[in-house]
Length: 149
Image (cartoon, rainbow, N blue to C red; front, top):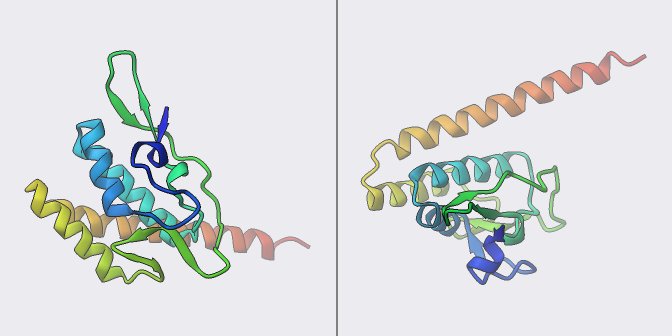
């Protein structure tokens, strides 16, 4: 197991990593575009779940006996807003309130490099899926709380 912090020499105490860099590093290290898509999904989740404690030590990779790398399971994932409303890992250069268009444009840059035309479609689908799931869970939990006598 190796963290993105150690692999990329990214300071975990100060904002020093961008999700675009993490996505690119994941695809290259794991030698698979799916690793980048997984990191993108996690980035969108962190944005919408207000997990702003998304520093480089919370992103890791596992190596098997053959020397192949894969993205480690998602961990330290919680509602954790930062006192200054900033993510530790930036979204296209934005740590505080990243605009959605910036996230989509960051994905567009990646897709042009990869010649993977489906990135934009995938990006929008992920954003929609995570927002729906978050809203559904929020509605369910708030109903449960309202029903407590």
